[in-house]
Image: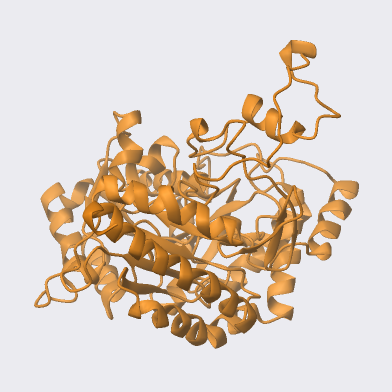
Length: 495
């Protein structure tokens, strides 16, 4: 899964428009500020009342504007001042069909007029029924049962609970542990956070939900050259044996790992993991909150790497984020224990399978099929990657990796030794310069240092050569300047 921790935004060096002045708040009911006629109304209301996610709220004041996006069209969005930005992150790996799709808006309006809401708790409605059947028809193998949620964290939470409930129904009452990878991101709810392998996200909320186990990831850029290419897969079996197979419920892995910067699997990795899971009676969950719905060129990421999991977690691109929706797609054998007599999976969410969201998702899949967007990603992945690879001549670019329209550039201090930037240098590089400068020049992407420093790109699936050229025209000079700035910053005598 993806978190918005470091989506690029104006840096501390960027300010509000010149001439902005301070005026007193006009308190309304319950202290709400009423500033209908003030030119900085949105800025003031945002700073006073809006608590943004994964955001350093202290970064914004009268001289440092909150980026306010007001409109979207195709691969672009526009801020409150009318400035256009290339949405090189699809908002947050979400808006797969691009912005401003009237057919998705029409589907939502039509469903609201017909049935705005009804629950899936003991009831069904046509949109959730039709969408579940359509998803089952697209999913690989016998993944035929769809349990809807409101988003990605809920999907991961639900999959872990379902894994434990499945084993319990089989008489394996001790299988509760979940194995995931270092630096992986699987969500922020307490169960999903236990699976997440990012220490900084976990420590403020400890103790964690018991059972989260972490193993090495597949970032071969940081491996010894003589390392067995499948050692990270074998590390999963070592963890299962160490914990005791009778205590392990599931392994959860992204086809391409988001946290750390688009780590791709080695050839044979998922086949080895599937064998390990089967050998020890452990379920395999493919976390495809990002990697499904065409992001890496297929309906589901597991298809690209030729494995069939027991469950898929999905969200984001399922509706291109035009309405909140997520799901767990489970194999028939996972659902079987809950289909008879008085058995039930005693879990749910009020808005899971919301009729409006399901109607939007149906329209979203229509667009993807009609415009063959999975094929578009496969056809354009090569040129997209070639453009990013061309940046390897810059001193700061250490590695380029990813799949489909889900790519990352790892930034290094020394290309020969692969030396990375320390915490202080990363802060200066990413937040002191790169994030704000990319945004200022009209490119929304992601700069992140929860592993080693990266720039991540994930454009809408409709993007093509024009957008790739625009990305390069911004990235190349900004990364070149970043390299020079960091050399001067770490060696003041050279300035």
